[in-house]
Length: 148
Image (cartoon, rainbow, N blue to C red; front, side, top):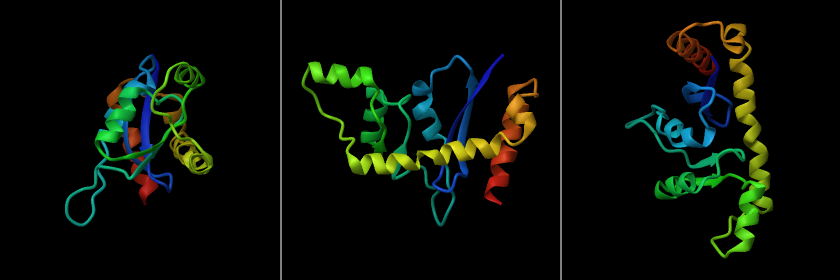
């Protein structure tokens, strides 16, 4: 049995939300589910919408981009080579991934640092827990420690 962690973090590599799925589940299909899990308490109502999303080439589906546009969320997601090739063959709305976007994309290593912190717990890295519920509880505890 394999497990995949779909995780969202802030700019300081602190976990905001995660969704646990089976290992065969595609990243792109869980994109909106993970972003819907964000709840950042503050003064007044909890914040649920980020200003910008940085993601890797596993997430640039039309559905995900449309979902982000509906909510007014800016995206820095590079297109895969096959998508760029299709776009060249027929006219469409070009995805601007110029110098400014590339500079922003360098900040995506924050998620890797967040995962590194989570995986420092050997039990989480090796997935010793038998049930998804206890594994998710360990992830919650690890995420809480990031905020302390």
